[in-house]
Structure formats: structure tokens, C-alpha cells
Length: 446
Image 1 (tube, rainbow, N blue to C red):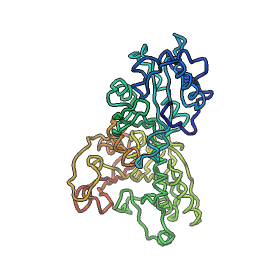
Image 2: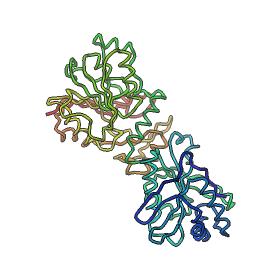
Image 3: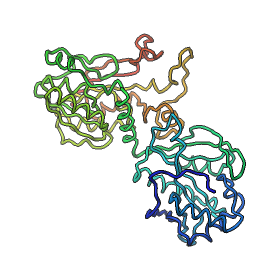
Image 4: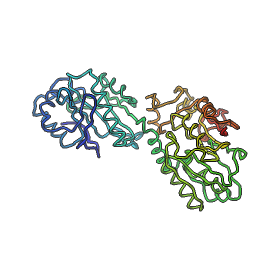
């Protein structure tokens, strides 16, 4: 019997994925002879944890399972006009792991005829399946495993961009043998902002500090002119940094959550909030209904062109959030475009120091364990760390990117200050330690 758990909700029926040399299609009963031809060769099945087929009857029984479960593609070689392997999609090991069970993930695996090894066909097929699972099924992650001694699979997995997560044990009942099983994960690079939005939605539901909207009491104080807001974790923005609110057109950029826009609205501003998190935008709607003001709600991704005409806003409020995107230069250019001449950009910025160290553990010295820039889309080990810590997909940015990027976009810097981590249990980058972790800047469109 085949040892795997089917992927709930996945069905190969009607799916055909085409690459340069292959068709990935559902198996049919007519594939039996081709299936047996490659499955009978010693070493092919054993690399995946099952014995090679001693008879065509064994292949027939397994093929019936494939036809019934509909979780396996046949790898059909277009030039040679035959099936040369299989590509399975099954339940992921992440479903039962506390650190990763929040992910919507499937596991992939493959078997290829020995006669076709070394031709790059498995990476070709793997990329096609990855593209389908991320862009059509919309998975958060894809997992894959290989036995430690299977160096051929390791090279394929690394070539396809997977991040090593951990080593575990796998016992094959069919081979009566235990293997060291290396487990990997892949996140969708093209969809990382959507993954981040899903993380933030969940964090808000769990009580995330930056997802808790202001109270009625705070709003009442704002009506009396008593207010402050944060760009960075602990230090209020100087009131002298703000232009007059009355009638001003204000953009809250990645500023959802009902923390700043309610204040600005109650002070007379005409506010628009742009965010990718449904939960953060819902908080904005909730406070607006409760307090009786109007606000424009825009769900949009700041890595793409902003959905506003040129010179739409008098000022932009952009609290710490560009740590969740890879390219900040685009953001500064778009901010400059949508601001009116003389418009003000207020930004909260992570300076990168938080990414150098391991998470604090009581009684243990901090160690520098990461290099900068911190970019998990280019560094699999950093991606694995973020996955394990449930930290979404984050990036460090340099002074040149954050400050220099604003200047190159056409801004004039008119104010700046530093700030620290807000968690009193952290041992570094706090006011007590004297190590700032954030910058705030005020810039004017020249």
C-alpha cells in the first residue's frame, strides 16, 4: 500500500500542467504498462520509502489508489509519448506541527524513471506544480521532504528555493526501515504581501497591540484637542510636525487598525486609509460608525501603484510597516506622486537592528545570529526562522533605502527622531539600553 494522507480539497481531475518537455495530467488505466516499467526498477521506489514493484499486479493495485484518490499527476514525456513518473500532492506535515499548523499548506513529492534522471525534468515539473498551488489554489506554503541519503532530491529541493526547517524520523512500514527525514517549506515570493496580510488578520484576532482601535474615551479627548499618535512604538509624534487638520486630505498608508485615522478625522481631516489587512480595515470602519465620521477605506497593496491620482493628498501618515515589504523605493516614489506640492510625509521606520539577534530568552546573552540585509526571499535560513517564529515575512532596510530613498524621490527632510522597542521584557533596543531600533522622519514634497 501507498503510505500517505490525501490532500483534502485537492483533486487532479481536469488539471493539465504543461512544461517544455512534460505534461502533468491525471493518471488513467492505460498508464499501467508505463507505470510498471519505471516502478519495477530497484532504487526508484526505495528513494521515496516504498519497495520497487515485483509484479505488474502490484503496479495495478497502486494505480487504482491513484485513480481513486486523485492526488497524483502522471508525468507524461511529450517527445517520448509515455509516462515516466508521478508527482503527488498530499497532506503536509505542517498540519500537525504547533509552529506551522496555522498555514494552509500541501506537501509535494515525486518519483521519476531512472532512465530520465539527471535531465532536469523534476525541477521543471516541480516549478509547474508550485506555480499552480500558489497562484490557483492560493496556498500559504508548500512542504517537501527527502531522506538524508537522497542527495539528488536535496539538490532539486534547494534549486527550487525551499527553506530547510528541521530533521525528523520517518518509519517506512513497507521497507521496515527508519529514515532521517529532512523537511522543507516554500513560501510564495510573488504573494508574500498577501501572506503578511493573513498573518496580521490573525494577530489582530489574537489581540495584537497594533490592531487595537482607540477607545471612545480617547476619541472624546481628541474632540477637546487632547491627543497624540505614534509613528514608532513609544514616542509620540511632535504636534509641530502636522499641517493644519481642518479640511486636509490625509492618507493613512498601511495605517489601518483604528488608531490614528480616528484622531485625524475628529480633528477635521478628510481621511483615506489604505491597507491590505481586512481586519485592520474593519477596525477603521467600526470606529468610524461608532464615532459618526466618514472615512474612505481602500484595500490595496503598497508594493503596487497606489490607486490614487497625482497630487491627491495634503499629508501622508505612514507608521512602521515597510518592514513587511521588500522594495521601499517604490513606496517613496508613489508617496511623492500622490502628495500635493508642499505636502508632508510622516514615516515610521525600522532601522534593522532587531533582525540581527535571536529572540530574547531570560538569563541568556544575546548573540548576533543574522546578517543584514535581512531578506527571507533571498535567504532560505532567514525564511525558515520567520516561519518558525510566526513573524510573517519581514525585511530590514538600510539608511540609504529609508532616508536616501525619500531624498531621491524628491522629498526634503525637515525632521527626524529615534525610538525604541515597546516591550519592557526585551533586553536590547530599549530606552534603558540606549539602543534605538526605529527612526521617524518628516519630509516635504519639494
